[in-house]
Image (cartoon, rainbow, N blue to C red):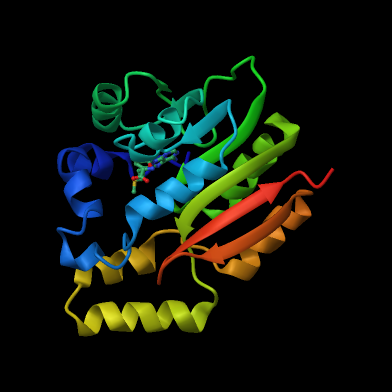
Length: 213
Ligand SMILES: C[S@@+](CC[C@H](N)C(=O)[O-])C[C@H]1O[C@@H](n2cnc3c(N)ncnc32)[C@H](O)[C@@H]1O
């Protein structure tokens, strides 16, 4: 459940850092300002931190550099291999947004970057419910991910990609589970979270959700 994209990430692992640095023109705008975005998220996080979809540990490294404790969860074996080399200070476990080792420790921040869209709506709801129960009362979920403010904007982005000949990007935007802002907001509120959204580039948003207690 929720791990249908893992083969793709096993294949992408070795060149992933080149893509996020802007070497692939198709994905340049998706990852525009990547380092600054991850730094903003890292600065907001409070130790101990639980991170999902660690990838090549770019966010993990920034959090660890602030002397915070990070427990990482990553389903792709190849990504985990690279993460462990790049960030040996963090414990990175096999698992995913829904199935992960239940750690007997308090969690102040649950973080993730560019990964939550791999879950469909049902899976997103299930994951968020688990996080609500896992977070400390004053804890916070802080995600960065691609989402669309509405359907018109999504169609506009797909058309723009096609017009530029970016067929892989256009296909991704159609097929992955990028949510609409209003639907995601509704999901958080229904589960009892207070949530805010801030645009970071044409695709990525910062999502901050507290328990509202
Ligand atoms: C686009 S990469 C983002 C990596 C890193 N967080 C970053 O900001 O560069 C997406 C990551 O999510 C992982 N992933 C895919 N499906 C997942 C799932 N169901 N649960 C957790 N992580 C998942 C992939 O293996 C990959 O490492």
